[in-house]
Each structure stands twice: as structure tokens, then as C-alpha cells.
Image (cartoon, rainbow, N blue to C red; front, top):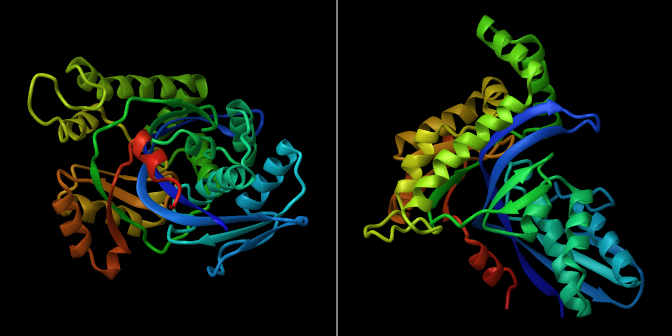
Amino acid sequence: MPIAVRSFAKINIGLRIGAAREDGFHELRTIYQTIGLHDIVRVDVARGTGIEIRSRNPKVPQDESNTCYRMAERVLRSLKQRNKVVIQIEKNLPIQGGLGAASSNAVATLLGIERALKAEIPPDEKLRMAAEVGSDVPLFLLGGTILGMGRGEQVYPLPDLPSLPLVITTPSAGISTPKAFQDWDTLQANGSSDKDRVKARLTAQSASDTMNMFSQSLFAWLTPAMVNGSSTGVSTRGGDRAEAPLLDLVRAGIENDFERVVFPQHPELREAKRVLEGEGARYASLSGSGSSVYGFFDSQDAAEKAAGNMGAKDGPAQATKILSRSEYWKQLFVN
């Protein structure tokens, strides 16, 4: 009997890009947040050898380049097992959408094989394997609200945000993350204006300034909920704090640096953000390097109305909500 796992998506609430590192990656700071949209990954482990990837979506690689394949190799090696593993990916999340779909699929594969073999890999070993497969794979071993550091693979759980509703829209543009980083480096090196050139020189002088600015913004955003006495964002002094994190988020000025290089090349993504804001989103942003754009709304009804109002020209739109850490783990396996 195959093990079915919900492979949840993530969004980035702010993303700061630091200097390029010696290993070719960039130093990053971001807040990852798991959300309700998901793929389904079915894992079947039987006698024999080999790893097989199946999907009806022709864009899903079915060879060794697939993150599920690479994860399955590592899991079998860690558990010292020789088995035939068949991984069926029911694809609902966009490819190259900035929602971490392939990374989430990899973690779903790991957890599915563990359950199928009734075995468990130590947590530190799982994190190591996840980081080898991809920079944002480890976040899906935590779920909820997460601080991402390093190249994104260093993950630290944050207090859960309240159950904020949101709308995800994914225009058809496919964004290459490596190219987006290259464009960022070019912008920082050359600048498109005197203002950008000044910023580029400042970044070259002290790349840590960007990281520090993000930390300050993060502190400014999360502190009000803590001061009010609850890490869940619900005030102990009475009243619903569900909308307060949105106001705090805007005031803190948390942004995604990729917007500076992606929006000029793909104006339809900037337009998607504008449409979400026009529909009432209190905060809207690109997720990762795109192409998905999301907006937070005051209520689920408002989010569903906005998703319904957005036409085909705006890209497919879906209303969902963020998933807390406990919700993430409670809903992970399909019974």
C-alpha cells in the first residue's frame, strides 16, 4: 500500500540577498511560511532495486535530476536498505513558482519512505540530507513560520503567526532562480541609476548591512505580538490580533529583494501584485524568485472573493491560509 503524503507549499515573507559566497551561493535572510496548497506524493516501497518517478505532468523530471529521486537515494543509503521505490507525484503546485514545490516533494518522499519501512532517520541526519538536496528543502522538516539563514538551508523555528488568509496567483512566466541571482549581482555591480550605484557600493563595502536591516525589520514586525503576551498573535489584553501582524508587517518594511530584478523583466508579475492590492490585500509580495505572487487579506471571505474576481489575465488565483507548525504535521499524511 503506497504511503500518501501532502507536500505543502511555502511562501517567503521578505527575502534579503547578501553577498555572493565562495561556494557560489548568496547569503540570505528570509522568513519561510508553510501554506495550505499542496501536491500529493505517493511512495511505494517493495522488493527489488531502483528508483522510479511517475507523474502525469510532463514538466516533472522523471530521472536523477528530480529532487525526490535524489532524496530517495540518500534515504536508502542512510537506512542501509536495498528496495524498489516508486514515487508518484500528483502535481497541483506550479513548477518554477517560488513556492518550494520540488523541495517539499523531496521531504514528502523522505517521510514516506520512513513510514513505509517503519524506520526513522535521526533529525540531524535528515537536516543534513535535506540541505544536500536543496537550499530550501530543510524548511519542510519544520513547517510553520521559520527563519531561513545561510543560503536558506539554516532553519530556525519562529513563533507561529495567526491563521492569516491569503491569495496565491501564478502568472505563466517561468522564473529561473540562478538567472535571478545573476541579475541581482549585475544590478549590484553596475546599478541602473546613481541611486542604485550608491547602493551597490554600500553593499560591496558591507554586505552584512542588508542582513542587519532584515533582522531589525523582523524584530520590529514580531515584537508587538510578543509584547502583547502571545506568540500566536492573539492579544491577552482582549481583541483579535489576526489583522495586527499585517499592519506590523507593512510598517516594518519587509520586502523581497528579487522584486527589484524580476519585476522589470516580467511586468505581469508587478501587475499581479498591483491587482492583489487593488482587491484589498493588506500586504502583497513575490514569493522567492517567483513567479508566484501572494497577498494577505483580513478574512477568508475577502480572500476567496478576491481570488474569484481575478480573471485569467491575472493568472490562476487560489485562496488558502497559512499553516501553523502543528497544522502542518497534523495534515501531512493522507489517511
